[in-house]
Length: 194
View 1 (cartoon, rainbow, N blue to C red):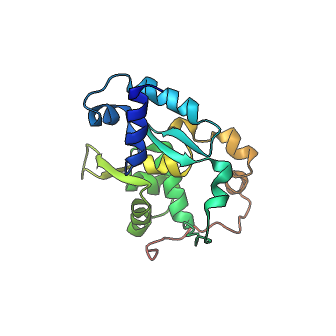
View 2 (cartoon, rainbow, N blue to C red):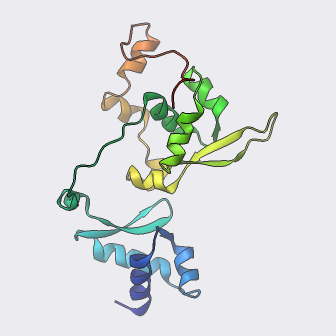
View 3 (cartoon, rainbow, N blue to C red):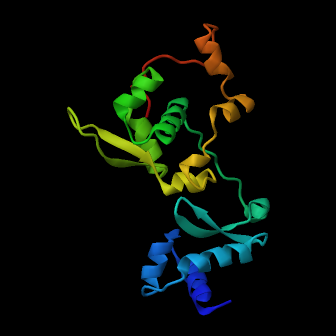
């Protein structure tokens, strides 16, 4: 292992959050060869108890997925997203950047402000600016934390329609379009949701 690999390894190990290759280079005083060092370290850590992985364009160490269960001491309370929040997150992920009005147009119902607030508090979406046009609406996009949480390297890794259909996730949607009743469908306004 050469000196740049050692420096990159130490910097990532001590980092409070994932870092890009450019950030690492700046942190190490403009060091060259950071990307090659990252690739070498990722190969070196492959198959070990901890792995060096890239999520989005940022690198971090994580526990090997097959060993994560060994580190859980307490059962975490799983906070489930509401159906509205899940739909809004999916729309943002597949159509970003997107405004609240565009989310509502796709969903077919109003989206409560609390829905987007929950997703921002989770760190999965962020305000990405304002759309040029009347009223200059706020637009939303996903974050690197979204990619890391769902184990995606980039948005290109989101499942396509065939993968969703194979997993059985499109059957209720197809039933709605075919005119069949869907017991889980809730086509009411969500203004009361928090």
